[in-house]
Amino acid sequence: MRFSITKIQEDFPQLKGGSEHYLDSQATSLTPRSVIDAQDAYYLKARANTHRAIFKEAALATDLYEDARTKIANFIGAKREEVILTGGATESSNMLVRMLDETPAFWGSGKREIVTSVMEHHASLVPLQQLAKRKGCMLSHIPLSPGSVRLDVKSVEGLISDETAIVSVMLASNVTGTINPISEIAKVAHRHGAFVVVDATAAIGHIPMHVDDLGADALFFSGHKILGPTGVGVLWVRKEMLEKLQPAVFGGHMISEVTKDDATWGDIPDRFEPGTKNIGGVIGLGAAVDYLNAVGLTEIHRHVSALTKSAIEALDALPGVHVVAERDTELNIGDVSFVCDFAHPHDVAEILGRNGVAVRPGHHCALPYHVELGIAATTRVSFYLYNDEDDVRGLVEAVKKVRALFAD
Amino acid sequence: MDSLYQEHILDHYKHPRNKREMDDADVVQRGKNVSCGDDLTWYVKWEEKGGSQRVADVSFSGYGCALSQSGASMLSLVLKGKTKEEVAALTREDMLALFHADIGHMREKCALLPLSTIKELLKQ
Image (cartoon, rainbow over all chains, first blue to last red):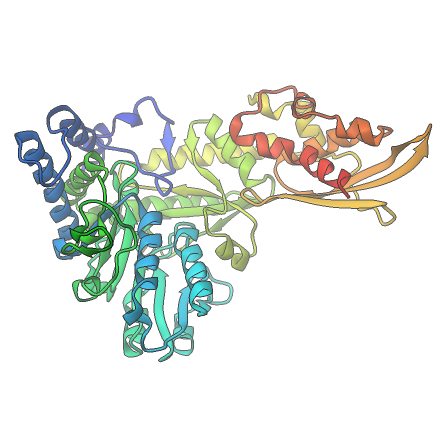
């Protein structure tokens, strides 16, 4: 399919009637009609619980749910039985940490170090902090290169050692958009026998991505940032490892046998999917993956990179505005954060919002990164496939209005 | 253009009253909204008057959005001369009324930071 911005914009109903310039896709993306339709189809025609029941709606629901799993697996280059469907990236991250925690064999070698980065989202960082406390692990952080928004990848050699059990780094920053060289970091980690976790939440759906190319052992993301419904997420773990991990959440569907006093676990991935999942949401995520594949991730990245470049250049040209973003837009997933000398990020976002420009102020759940960058908060603009140059113009005009309002 | 950013709010933000650190304050209290980066410190000097403790002098320092900072400036004018009991009796509605604007749910924390911080100060 040729990349047609007009056609894409027609596919997103909220572009008509919502904010004139939706620039908050890194918080959550808009939803195309096809995803809404796929989710509706479940509620209108296939509403039944998945697995086991054999009446026709139940069979249809199970087929739709499992088809979505296959689509998601193909989307990231994984095997379908490696894909665990969750409620979101935060649930995936917490579940993975608990699964590792509850698996004695994982800690049998006595390794007690965890390496992450200063760039991480709290959804990845905070569960690791808690794990480190429970296990008595040392938690260390890949720092930034001085004066840069990027990680100092050279420092990895010194941080990762034979004592390192887990290396957990995000694929791209949700603040500056910087894409990290995960495969390089993973190579070092694997040389020391460490388990590599990748938080792909900000990056997925913005750049082509394959778990093997990354060298990941586990990876997670949310569905709602890639055109899918809210309340759906994915946890992927490489099969050889997943088969060894203990489940962290228990209940129906995940068991093989249950007696009064004990239980044994079912096959993967069922073992990690207790209870009734967000069936309609998973089916919607499958449709979102179809949509992204049809447009093409390479084309999406090219389109978003061009807008990112325009926005950085336009904001740079405004006196008193300082861009905090990855400036090599090939290596930026589409996020441009900035600070203004003349107004606080909250006021900037408020006035932009009142002028039809939807952006987000704050620390974007990455407080340590902001501390490292020496700023309390930023205003973040994030682009996706349905944005265009008119959104950049709208942004710039609105920032000029903020300056006019706050100027003495 | 923006009813939230009326002239008196912008005036208090750009030209804050009583914004200074106070070296000889009796009590100092810092309050923060971590999620947006608002940071506010109150300085109060008490005096005995008519059998009760009153605010003899008050000032603030800090940085943050127009609501938290203009709110502190406006509240500082209200606080002068008030007894401890009167400060304690100040309500959320009293604070929001200073803005003469409809403060949405999203910005309430910013607008209320000056009040919540002065209430913390009273606990000292």
